[in-house]
Image 1 (cartoon, rainbow, N blue to C red):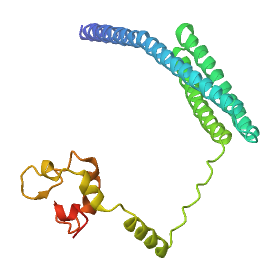
Image 2 (cartoon, rainbow, N blue to C red):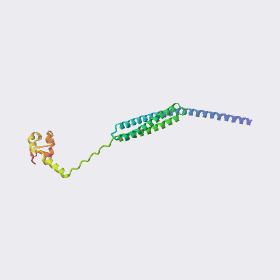
Image 3 (tube, one colour):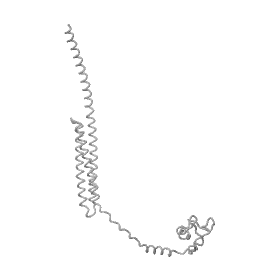
Image 4 (tube, rainbow, N blue to C red):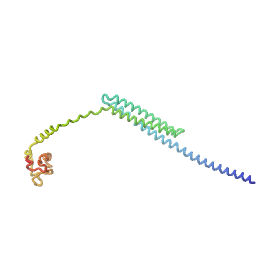
Length: 236
């Protein structure tokens, strides 16, 4: 009797364990199915972004190559061969970028409809990286072509220094060749300019007289900021 009960107990335990195992496997399978469904979508998004980036880099490389060709076409005489070589390098790099962009789009197709989306996404990212490097090389070559096509600016000769004695003589000529103030006094209405009637003309008072305003410092012999009648007449 005890033996029969023991067999029945063991059988029940086995059934419970089997049921628990089936439940666990079912849960694991559901989680794996969810991950499997999410993973392809993520891979497809990554592949699409990589393909777009590769296309942008390829277009930039084309523009760099076109810039290099234009620089060669307008190069100064004698500067064309060097610029042409750089333009050729830019075009080669642009071609590599375009090919890499094509590879990226092919990898995008694999990620979208292929059996291994993750692999397609990885290939698309690698192709985008190649396109980016090629685009940078195209830009460098284009910059070199522009520089090679442009002759250096001619050196500007230095202005010779004026000897001290010559400068002094020139200054003396300028001072002695100025017209006498007496002539200027005859043309200036001192009283009408002397607004405050203090017998002096300030810079503010002569502001309306272009000649006095321009030559104020020269006429103001004692440099006190005022012009007297005597100074205007040429005296001290």
